Length: 517
Image 1 (spheres, rainbow, N blue to C red):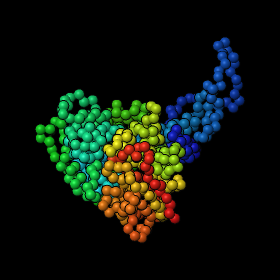
Image 2 (image 1 turned 30 degrees about the horizontal axis):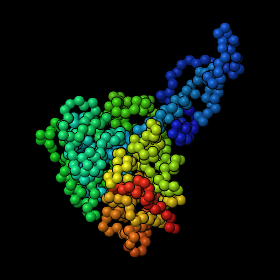
Image 3 (image 1 turned 90 degrees about the vertical axis):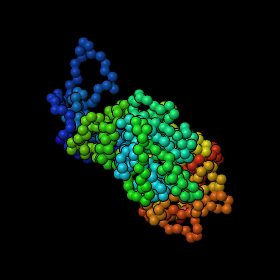
Image 4 (image 1 turned 90 degrees about the horizontal axis):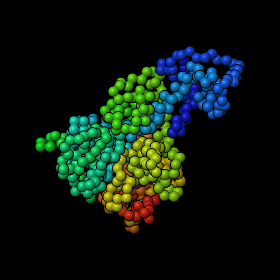
């Protein structure tokens, strides 16, 4: 049986015009009371009481799914099928929204594994990251290194470099630790030991112990340019970053540093049906105790369960395919057309990435679900150092999704951004632009689609301010210009590394992206 077209509304607020689907997983066929057209009120019995009208259901109920039919509360077969289709769809979309942090890192791991196995492969951009890589909102101003760490076989020792900004997040993209300038080693370099879930064995006394709920973990470190040169930062990382099993501490293996500068590869997760296949891989690898039971329950209802194969039939695969499309649409809606006010300043096009000021997306004990989806669809890296006030340490960010009038940014038009003087920074500021579709570096004729004070060729005005121009054609003269593409949308991020007090008290702020023509 195929239900007719129907409208669906997910709890997170997306309306869908649904198509017909096969019913191979429909309700079990059972005998139902015979429907009657002329209902006779039941007689009053000895034990009869008044029943509140909020308890029974009418024989016919008009909904966005169509007419639902019952016989004295018993649904007919068509009604049950429509409701099952709706709930399978709804749970699929909700599962997608609730697991996006994990999907993001699982996609990242997939990209890293193209270059070598876990624990021994370190992907490093010795010549700075450029726009050939598909990666959520990086910048082009630091030396990046990424690793995937797997503690399935036991604890891992990390010897970290001095003067870097480092993060470790678990497989569900939850914060585990900082190392480097914002970590307990305070930028001097340190020895850490990453422990697997439930570990009760020996921990070296002179190491910082890191507890993770998952076996899989993501490591990122960033080193600064020196006079615009990435070579010293790359050298620092390659000479000082070491990762090896605690069991092999007496004879640790060397890391394989792979310079991926200028290489094209993808670290961004899928947003089609294969999203659910990726999440199933994560579920099979990690302990159930590492995530929320209610979310695992949602996944179980759509066929994703630890220890069991994920094998949806034709009906369920069609529902999951459609659910992925709606989940994708909702993710883009709350990023680019959000219905909440995330403005960093009054009447500003700049937005904060962490509304509520929590890297866990908590406000008064409540998880801000849409804000978490928005962040993980857009960006990479969870750390308190991006949120907490750490004067002179860490990094801070502003999202530039719109111009000063609240309009999306058009690659065929010209814009200007003014950076006032006396930028409150210990290290540098940076403005980088991204593709609306991929949320990755905008791929133009420019290798590095960013302007930064760390570059020796940045144009600084006499008063210490700077102006940045955006558009398809470079203005005349020596100017800071970022190329855009007609017909393609773009957005930007403003970064401060080593932010100082005027950033936090907002006595200093960047200018707005202004439309020039």
